[in-house]
Image (cartoon, rainbow, N blue to C red; front, side):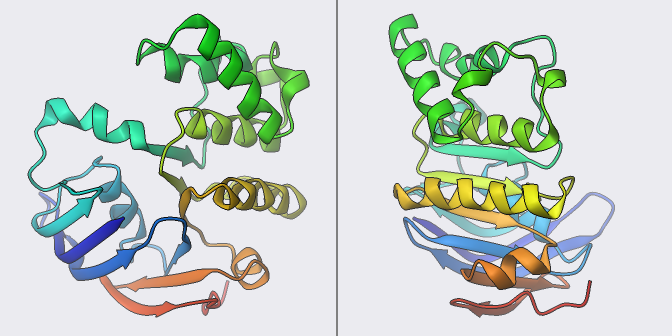
Length: 228
């Protein structure tokens, strides 16, 4: 599904964020990416959805080498990858329904199919009754669940969640994890960068720990392993 081999990433300021990372992630896995601040987690995540390009090595997703893909092909790659951000990135002037529908409109899906699919994903995240609300009328947890709905509306094979509970209280964070688990249960691969020791230790999944740009641990049903 995702194969990284000897991946390096050095930024223009000379900082090497990843230093020879090799890892395989299979279809349907749920993987936590953990590690200290500045360890390279965000770079790891951004390379997968091609926000950044590797300086060396290869990243293969669904038989596509992200180091070689042409820029005009990137939007097509991202149709198979949903992204959930810490700060939601919802469009404030659009309703919940419109925020989610927008992801389908850009690929010219039919209005009938858009309505059907938007209501399906709102059902998945438990917010079907909030379709006509705007983001500022929702709680932080509700906004994040809408962000998840938007990320999965295209039936992506992979969902990247970058600190999705970072701005949320503990109870709401647990709700978000349960929502992501339900998405994973449908066969979608989940890759989640997180600083939440409680979540990682409670919801046991594969843990990849990145330290100083290298993979320090890769454990099935692992633990967070850092003091917070």
